[in-house]
Length: 201
Image (cartoon, rainbow, N blue to C red; front, side, top):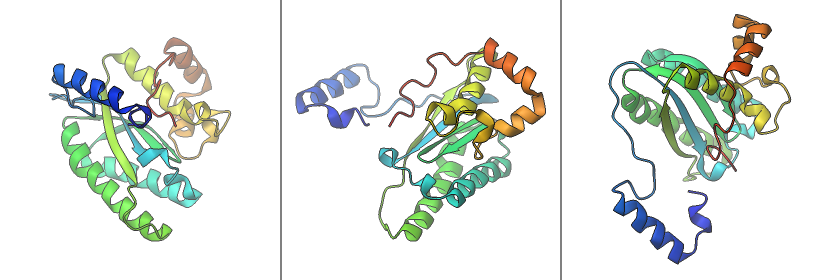
Protein backbone atom coordinates (compact mmCIF):
# COMPACT_ATOMS: atom_id res chain seq x y z
CA UNK A 1 0.00 0.00 0.00
CA UNK A 2 2.72 2.46 0.98
CA UNK A 3 4.92 1.67 -2.01
CA UNK A 4 1.89 2.00 -4.31
CA UNK A 5 1.64 5.69 -3.52
CA UNK A 6 5.23 6.26 -4.64
CA UNK A 7 4.77 4.60 -8.04
CA UNK A 8 4.23 6.57 -11.23
CA UNK A 9 1.00 6.02 -13.14
CA UNK A 10 2.86 3.86 -15.68
CA UNK A 11 4.38 1.73 -12.89
CA UNK A 12 0.94 1.27 -11.32
CA UNK A 13 -0.57 0.07 -14.60
CA UNK A 14 2.33 -2.35 -15.09
CA UNK A 15 2.00 -3.69 -11.53
CA UNK A 16 -1.75 -4.25 -11.91
CA UNK A 17 -1.33 -6.02 -15.24
CA UNK A 18 1.34 -8.29 -13.76
CA UNK A 19 -0.89 -9.24 -10.80
CA UNK A 20 -3.87 -9.75 -13.08
CA UNK A 21 -1.79 -12.06 -15.32
CA UNK A 22 -0.90 -14.17 -12.27
CA UNK A 23 -4.60 -14.25 -11.28
CA UNK A 24 -4.02 -12.85 -7.80
CA UNK A 25 -5.90 -9.97 -6.15
CA UNK A 26 -4.77 -6.66 -7.58
CA UNK A 27 -3.93 -4.82 -4.37
CA UNK A 28 -3.61 -7.42 -1.61
CA UNK A 29 -2.12 -10.84 -0.96
CA UNK A 30 -4.49 -13.73 -1.67
CA UNK A 31 -6.23 -15.30 1.32
CA UNK A 32 -5.74 -19.06 1.46
CA UNK A 33 -8.15 -21.63 2.80
CA UNK A 34 -6.96 -23.62 5.81
CA UNK A 35 -8.19 -26.80 7.48
CA UNK A 36 -7.65 -27.95 11.07
CA UNK A 37 -5.98 -26.32 14.05
CA UNK A 38 -3.24 -24.12 12.61
CA UNK A 39 -0.89 -21.59 14.20
CA UNK A 40 -0.69 -18.12 12.65
CA UNK A 41 0.98 -14.80 13.16
CA UNK A 42 -1.63 -12.07 12.68
CA UNK A 43 -0.42 -8.56 11.88
CA UNK A 44 -2.71 -5.52 11.79
CA UNK A 45 -1.62 -1.95 11.13
CA UNK A 46 -3.13 1.47 11.55
CA UNK A 47 -3.94 3.20 8.27
CA UNK A 48 -0.80 4.83 6.86
CA UNK A 49 1.00 3.62 10.00
CA UNK A 50 -0.27 6.58 11.98
CA UNK A 51 0.33 6.04 15.74
CA UNK A 52 -3.36 6.03 16.62
CA UNK A 53 -3.04 3.19 19.15
CA UNK A 54 -0.12 4.96 20.80
CA UNK A 55 -1.92 8.24 21.47
CA UNK A 56 -1.59 7.40 25.18
CA UNK A 57 -0.42 4.59 27.48
CA UNK A 58 -4.07 4.04 28.39
CA UNK A 59 -5.02 3.38 24.78
CA UNK A 60 -2.11 0.97 24.28
CA UNK A 61 -3.24 -0.92 27.39
CA UNK A 62 -6.87 -0.83 26.22
CA UNK A 63 -5.92 -2.31 22.85
CA UNK A 64 -3.77 -5.00 24.45
CA UNK A 65 -6.45 -5.95 26.96
CA UNK A 66 -9.12 -6.00 24.25
CA UNK A 67 -7.12 -8.32 22.01
CA UNK A 68 -6.36 -10.73 24.87
CA UNK A 69 -10.03 -10.88 25.87
CA UNK A 70 -11.08 -11.28 22.25
CA UNK A 71 -8.86 -14.34 21.83
CA UNK A 72 -10.19 -15.81 25.09
CA UNK A 73 -13.83 -15.24 24.13
CA UNK A 74 -13.30 -16.82 20.69
CA UNK A 75 -11.49 -19.88 22.04
CA UNK A 76 -8.34 -18.87 20.18
CA UNK A 77 -5.05 -20.01 21.73
CA UNK A 78 -2.86 -16.93 22.19
CA UNK A 79 0.85 -17.74 22.47
CA UNK A 80 2.39 -14.28 22.15
CA UNK A 81 1.41 -10.71 21.37
CA UNK A 82 2.82 -7.22 21.01
CA UNK A 83 0.91 -3.95 20.68
CA UNK A 84 2.85 -0.96 19.36
CA UNK A 85 1.71 2.63 18.65
CA UNK A 86 0.75 1.88 15.04
CA UNK A 87 0.38 -1.91 14.71
CA UNK A 88 0.11 -5.17 16.58
CA UNK A 89 1.11 -8.83 16.23
CA UNK A 90 -0.63 -11.93 17.60
CA UNK A 91 0.72 -15.48 17.56
CA UNK A 92 -2.35 -17.70 17.74
CA UNK A 93 -3.78 -21.13 17.04
CA UNK A 94 -7.29 -21.52 15.65
CA UNK A 95 -9.31 -23.85 13.45
CA UNK A 96 -11.05 -20.94 11.69
CA UNK A 97 -8.78 -17.99 11.05
CA UNK A 98 -11.25 -16.55 8.50
CA UNK A 99 -14.01 -16.34 11.10
CA UNK A 100 -11.63 -14.87 13.66
CA UNK A 101 -10.37 -12.19 11.29
CA UNK A 102 -13.56 -11.23 9.49
CA UNK A 103 -15.95 -11.43 12.44
CA UNK A 104 -14.07 -11.03 15.72
CA UNK A 105 -11.16 -8.82 14.66
CA UNK A 106 -13.38 -6.95 12.22
CA UNK A 107 -15.78 -6.09 15.02
CA UNK A 108 -12.90 -5.15 17.34
CA UNK A 109 -11.46 -2.83 14.69
CA UNK A 110 -14.86 -1.27 14.08
CA UNK A 111 -15.56 -0.63 17.77
CA UNK A 112 -12.10 0.77 18.51
CA UNK A 113 -12.25 2.98 15.41
CA UNK A 114 -15.55 4.47 16.52
CA UNK A 115 -14.39 4.97 20.12
CA UNK A 116 -10.96 6.40 19.34
CA UNK A 117 -12.24 8.69 16.60
CA UNK A 118 -14.81 10.03 19.05
CA UNK A 119 -12.10 10.58 21.69
CA UNK A 120 -9.79 12.29 19.18
CA UNK A 121 -12.47 14.41 17.52
CA UNK A 122 -11.74 12.68 14.22
CA UNK A 123 -15.07 11.33 12.98
CA UNK A 124 -14.72 9.43 9.72
CA UNK A 125 -10.98 8.89 10.07
CA UNK A 126 -9.78 5.51 8.80
CA UNK A 127 -8.06 3.90 11.79
CA UNK A 128 -7.17 0.39 10.62
CA UNK A 129 -5.76 -0.78 7.32
CA UNK A 130 -6.30 -4.55 7.49
CA UNK A 131 -5.08 -7.70 9.21
CA UNK A 132 -2.97 -10.31 7.50
CA UNK A 133 -2.37 -13.90 8.58
CA UNK A 134 0.75 -15.97 7.99
CA UNK A 135 0.53 -19.70 8.81
CA UNK A 136 3.35 -21.34 10.73
CA UNK A 137 5.03 -23.88 8.47
CA UNK A 138 7.03 -25.63 11.20
CA UNK A 139 8.09 -25.44 14.85
CA UNK A 140 11.14 -23.47 13.70
CA UNK A 141 8.86 -20.93 12.00
CA UNK A 142 6.70 -20.77 15.14
CA UNK A 143 9.57 -20.07 17.55
CA UNK A 144 11.22 -17.60 15.18
CA UNK A 145 7.87 -15.79 14.99
CA UNK A 146 7.58 -15.79 18.78
CA UNK A 147 11.06 -14.23 18.99
CA UNK A 148 10.13 -11.73 16.29
CA UNK A 149 7.02 -10.60 18.15
CA UNK A 150 8.85 -10.12 21.44
CA UNK A 151 11.73 -8.34 19.68
CA UNK A 152 9.42 -5.97 17.79
CA UNK A 153 9.55 -3.05 20.29
CA UNK A 154 13.36 -3.27 20.20
CA UNK A 155 13.35 -3.38 16.38
CA UNK A 156 11.32 -0.18 16.28
CA UNK A 157 13.44 1.57 18.90
CA UNK A 158 10.91 1.86 21.72
CA UNK A 159 13.02 -0.10 24.23
CA UNK A 160 16.40 -1.81 24.38
CA UNK A 161 15.18 -4.99 26.09
CA UNK A 162 12.11 -7.11 25.36
CA UNK A 163 10.81 -7.12 28.90
CA UNK A 164 10.82 -3.32 29.12
CA UNK A 165 7.90 -2.99 26.69
CA UNK A 166 4.75 -3.15 28.80
CA UNK A 167 2.26 -3.99 26.05
CA UNK A 168 3.45 -7.46 25.05
CA UNK A 169 3.75 -10.99 26.35
CA UNK A 170 7.54 -10.76 26.66
CA UNK A 171 7.71 -10.32 30.45
CA UNK A 172 5.23 -13.15 30.98
CA UNK A 173 7.15 -15.38 28.58
CA UNK A 174 10.46 -14.72 30.37
CA UNK A 175 8.85 -15.41 33.73
CA UNK A 176 7.42 -18.70 32.45
CA UNK A 177 10.44 -20.14 30.65
CA UNK A 178 13.30 -18.33 32.40
CA UNK A 179 16.05 -16.21 30.89
CA UNK A 180 18.33 -19.14 30.11
CA UNK A 181 15.67 -20.96 28.07
CA UNK A 182 14.60 -17.73 26.35
CA UNK A 183 18.22 -17.02 25.37
CA UNK A 184 18.60 -20.57 24.09
CA UNK A 185 15.42 -20.22 22.00
CA UNK A 186 16.68 -16.88 20.63
CA UNK A 187 19.96 -18.51 19.52
CA UNK A 188 18.30 -21.62 18.10
CA UNK A 189 15.51 -19.79 16.26
CA UNK A 190 16.93 -16.44 15.07
CA UNK A 191 14.59 -14.03 13.35
CA UNK A 192 17.12 -13.23 10.58
CA UNK A 193 15.20 -11.27 7.91
CA UNK A 194 11.78 -12.26 9.25
CA UNK A 195 9.38 -9.36 9.15
CA UNK A 196 11.23 -7.40 6.48
CA UNK A 197 8.69 -4.94 5.09
CA UNK A 198 5.88 -6.35 7.26
CA UNK A 199 5.42 -3.26 9.35
CA UNK A 200 7.79 -0.61 8.05
CA UNK A 201 6.79 3.03 8.36
